[in-house]
Amino acid sequence: MENIMLPSGAKIIDIIHETTAEYTFRVAYDQPIRHGQFFQLSIPKVGEAPISVSAKGEGWIEFTIRKVGRLTEGLFGLQPGHTIFLRGPYGNYFPIESFDNKALVVIAGGTGLAAVRSLLRHYADNRADIRDVYLIAGFKDINSVLFTQDLQRFRETFNTIATLDNMTAPGFSTGLVTAHIPSIPFAELGDCNVVIVGPPLMMRFASEACIKNGADPDNMWLSFERKMSCAVGKCGHCKINETYVCLEGPIFRYTKAQELLD
Amino acid sequence: MGYRVSYEQADRLLQTWQKQYRIYAPKRFAGRGWKPGTDMIRYGEIQSFRDVAYTEQSHFSPKDVVAPIMQTMLSFTADEVKVSSIDDRGILLLARPCDIHGIHRLDKIFLKNGGQADFYYQRYREKVKFVMIECREGWDHCFCVSMGANRTDDYSMAVRFGPDDLLIEVRDEDFADSLAGLPAVDFTPEFVSQDKKPVQLPVIKNPEQLKAAYDLPMWAEYNDRCISCGSCNTVCTTCSCFDTIDVIFSETSRDGERRRVWSSCMLESFSTMAGGHAVRKTPGERMRFKVLHKVHDYRSRFGGDEHMCIGCGRCDIRCPEDISFVDAVNRLSAAMAGQAVVVGTKEEI
Ligand SMILES: Cc1cc2nc3c(=O)[nH]c(=O)nc-3n(C[C@H](O)[C@H](O)[C@H](O)COP(=O)(O)OP(=O)(O)OC[C@H]3O[C@@H](n4cnc5c(N)ncnc54)[C@H](O)[C@@H]3O)c2cc1C
Ligand code: SF4
Ligand code: SF4
Ligand code: FES
Image (cartoon, rainbow over all chains, first blue to last red; front, top):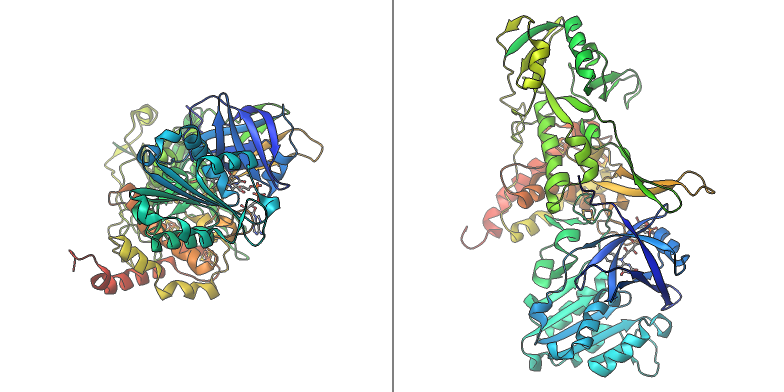
């Protein structure tokens, strides 16, 4: 009998301090995964939590984790060489086959950027696969900026606006992500996909602004965050109507998301 | 094939079966009820058929036999994870027809949902054989017929308990030998055929109607009365939700366990994420979530005729605030019947 909830140990290769509250953990892993999927990550005796894969490479994947509670705090105490426990990958993923050769708009708020980072890196590495990428990445302030190196590459490769909520800094715009949505030329992009990840209110206002500016609700994708205990459709925590976010999500087409009533 | 068996003979059978099975049935725990001076009837291992509390419905369901209130999943030492083990013997579970249906509902979640079986449930469930406790009358508060959970043929044996003896029907060859030679009688169990108070089920056919059900003002009425204690979930056969927690045995110990414990969608913390953001903030929203899961969401996910609720009525008996699930379902159904014309899709109007 297979035990689908049995985690296995993985070595931490490197830990990058993005901010004081967000670290990126590079972990040894060599199985295939898709952009947008997540793992149940745990430290024995501390607990387990769903965390998105923020990047992948030869023999490793990365998780970017915000310190908010028991497990995440526990992770911050670890060092390279230590073992963490993983089970997954879980959830659906961004449908890159239908993103390819079209325009892509990505709007990310705060740690939400972690969930789309692997997708963005994929298109930065394979620039010819995508027509245009418009990225709006919002951070609270200059101390909350994530992925400085990747951001530099995205700036060079894509149409990138990195913005700080209410602070000015060289290389950054000012204002919430929604303030910059009107600068995306939706009318000229033709067949275009929109990906929005971030806190619930940000996703709501950003979606509305995109639609108002001409985005097609059927080609907009949101990544949902819900409390999860199992990630395999058993514990019930992530259920919305007849939908389980851990199974059918975390990524939903906007038009489907509108039908999900908590 | 049926047999008439005295309690003494039945207990000799029990001892034979105990070599291979642990035998669980509703038992009376004197003075342990939730009101002072009352008894508690819940499931436990029996050593005699006299232990079976058959004159009342059990206050707790049999689900904890297959999905214990708390079970250890893994134990940890410094660098090792070890899966817990359970007793090898089979499980004979004495249960009424509704509760056998209830276990089938749990099967949907634990064995089918997501296309993969849950190990920690399956390892108990695959050991279970049912001994059906015949239920011919039902009680004032239950409504198994409305929920289609009054009849079942998933049992190895069926028992009619009497004050002096038992009638046993055997369907499973594994038990035929042990009964052979006892006085044979004509006995096939009867089932409840009518609810004392039938329940109306809501008709919700499309997202617009579901939205209308969500927006009904009735849900807010639960805000003042429901104390979010989760008792209704606890007694329910078909509530399957759980939390996963890690415990260490002491601050200085490197050894610990990962455990699965029952959770409850009526608790405020059920949907609370890190940072304190809760998806369902009020008791009314949580009542809506529970009711719709029981009489709509489950069926719309898995198809077929069956709802999650089996109509055992335990939640109504248990609620300390006298909140009736049955009333909520009936009110929802009445409201949706009134609204169907207004919010139906074009084809239906
Ligand atoms: C699909 C998915 C992907 C995710 N990806 C990422 C990611 O890439 N990076 C990332 O950092 N996070 C991510 N998250 C969020 C992450 O899972 C949570 O931050 C994590 O579960 C917190 O776990 P913890 O043990 O540290 O917190 P806990 O100690 O479990 O604290 C949070 C829990 O404690 C309780 N709690 C905390 N505060 C309160 C309060 N004020 N009131 C009541 N209860 C409270 C709640 O039950 C809450 O669930 C993701 C979530 C999902 C669903
Ligand atoms: S919801 Fe109430 S009546 Fe229905 S199965 Fe659960 S406890 Fe029984
Ligand atoms: S409905 Fe009753 S039993 Fe259920 S949580 Fe509310 S007060 Fe408790
Ligand atoms: S996280 Fe447990 S059911 Fe989705």
